[in-house]
Image (cartoon, rainbow, N blue to C red; front, side, top):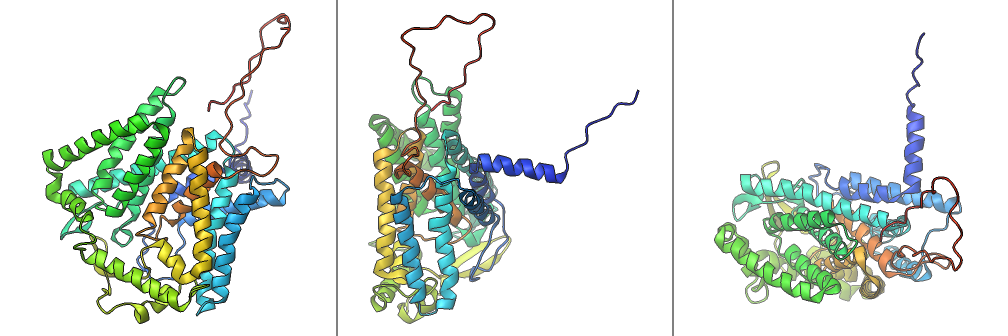
Length: 473
């Protein structure tokens, strides 16, 4: 007798199942966005007006999916406060674009700003429906950081990284020397996410294995972060970790600070890492005002350039993407023509300085007072809400947002990892902002505790029915 095997599902059926899974849990696309940041793009033209990466495509797919849900009548969980804060950013960018010195060139900047600071964050806000979604996205940050950390550590140990003080020892991960800050950003995000996940598992009911794994991941990521030689990432990570630990446990924060200091002494002195530049790089942080090196001096000059551009366009700014057009006419003569970049794949090149390397000065020069007020309202609203409402894994949003706000003091959007800023803002918005009426507001609700009835009914005959599993907080 012949056996009839069931036919394999066709591509259409597989696509339908994948679409149903994404519709049921759109946070999968947010996690995919984080992981796709690790895909090398091979982009070598930093002056191009538009850079579209696989991570950007995944983030836009998330926006499209949530937009389709909205058209189907599935109201997203966005409260009036969130609408006002994100709407103000769109309005400020639109006004700056209309009044730009070159409106045609500013359109691409308007689209990028809307994607990074409004569309993707609100899509992430809508995609976070329970704690599983939150842990999924935080787990993707940790996994991406581990991938980049392994690659970066190998580059340092085998001397195959980007050039630093004439030696190919700077860890840059899969991003290359033209995106020198990308690996340190990804590793910083992952370190903070791992630390927050570990802290959330403390106490009775926590998963001890997950806690140990996350602490181990955070400890490992310290090394690739150190050999990235990124002073900005070190400062931002230290401040964000301190805020996270103080929010969770002040005594533990003090104990960890002592341990971190001891580990730094052993790392720099006992193992000779200081000889390769980490100690010198750390000591240079204290001299950025008294005796700044060339990179710091250039950054100060770029900040002054942005201020002078703002003085010429005080209310609505010069328009998105206008800084690079007006830089030469407002910059001092001592400003360098670019920064040096070198690795095995690109050789030696000069990377042009196309932004002020400070997000706040960039907004001020390109969008004026209207723009800086809109962004200040968004950032401070999210920070205040996270400080007030964050608990459990929600403390990760507080730590990641703190990192972004500190990093914006000496960096701005641009490069492959820009879309990660959007994911962080979405996580922060989910923790900080109240939801729309009729929806769960603020932090994700704790599982309900069943209350026994005053008159318990006798158990039915036969096997007892299985109880529905209550999700763990």
